[in-house]
Image (tube, rainbow, N blue to C red):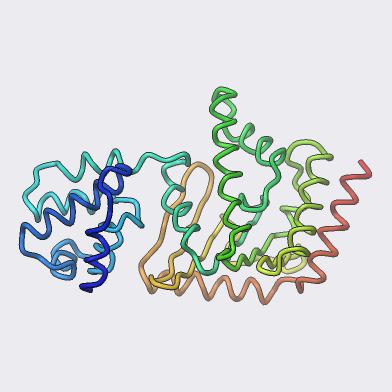
Length: 281
């Protein structure tokens, strides 16, 4: 505990709105004579969670910021800082999950209809975002495309997480963009899984029937120094789930989905076949 708090003192509060939030939280907590654990008890979270905000490794949360203001008697100070610190290139509902990807030890994702963002080609991402953001400007669409592609940098890092993807077969058949875009995208999947031993792809075939996750994308992340989390997403909305019992339920469902899927080798063969089908169009 003491070591973590001492490291927080080394933080430059003026690096970003988030580090300023963390520095201000530490200052107000210490002025109140509270340890991280004691403050956590008062705002219904763990001391470790408070430490993550003070060290700027987690984005501030609006509800927690409101409780901090109430407990520490700081008016709306942390609520205002929270609004600044939560600005992101990503959609607000996904921004927390996007930042957790960087710290994850493993990322397990089920994708029922679309290739996951971490493995999308630029053309596929552009076609998908253009369709989803039909009334946004070209500049706004391009900004979202680049933000998505930037996320993929974690796969080239020496500390890259283990990425385990389960694609429903529908994701191989629903055309996003042109047939050429689909052929390029599916070929990229095969090439990435073949070249990167930390990327594993399985396909849940149509023959498997109903599964627990048919209604939306689900991402399960584990960490070396924090509890596991789940992110569940549907059109234009998503939810980061941290309640341990519910996270465990998602993990069990994901394990069952993996068990019902084709082997990695058979999956890549199916993806390769689907890529050839699109290329022949």
